[in-house]
Length: 358
Image (cartoon, rainbow, N blue to C red):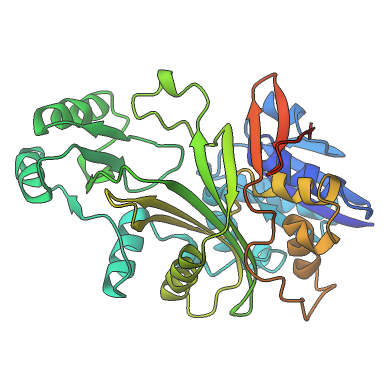
């Protein structure tokens, strides 16, 4: 029985990753870590290890100790922050299936610059060397509201749609006054009001093995978030769009000459719903990608290779060396995923039928 370590296992993505592996016929011994000792109770793991945050000097030593004590065969770091620090450690990197740390470390601004240099569509963006530059940002980027967002992080961190430069100034200064951010953490972008698309892909030695797209439709408790974005969606829908596939494949190849591992792309439509790439997470599954893997095994009854976390682990273990090309759009078009706290997870199929997942 292979032994797998899942870091960040108490988060939604980590719980779903473990769930996806448990949905297959193969048995795994799974060790889960998380800095939150309460959330660590959620995943169906065999051993639980409470760690400090990834930024703590004791994080890597404790991960190494856990790997040694449990003879771990493969490490899956679910949060991108933990993927980065683990990829930077030569000893631990050998037990992962991650892109190079230089690719994982790209923040949103760096990604935007690379994409723009490769003539790929991105939102017009400005950075700030002084808070007083906000007025010129609004003048140069247009009269419409502008999106204030963080260069790093997930879940809409530091984000707010601001109507004018005064509003943006208040927002940024609030974070700075609370010592929760610096001016350099922010960037200013044109507002993209169109569709909100997520594209997940899995690559092996430069070849695209599988991908799928979905539209994010609703977020949980969006009324309590100033940005309306709270991370993982409660309502999403599988879509098939060849233009999105082509754009995202080009984007991945622009940031990594030989993609290897998981790459998640966020896109947003402009006023005419022309897609712009807003973010690329290298080495990371989107939160619900493992859940779609579970659904693939339990509901769609697809071959186990369509359960991407399982395929990823098998390749990472070296048990598969020549993976079959599954192609794009691996899940049924127009299938909706409905989920909310204490409400269960449901699949709404194209024909209108409904199936409870969890």
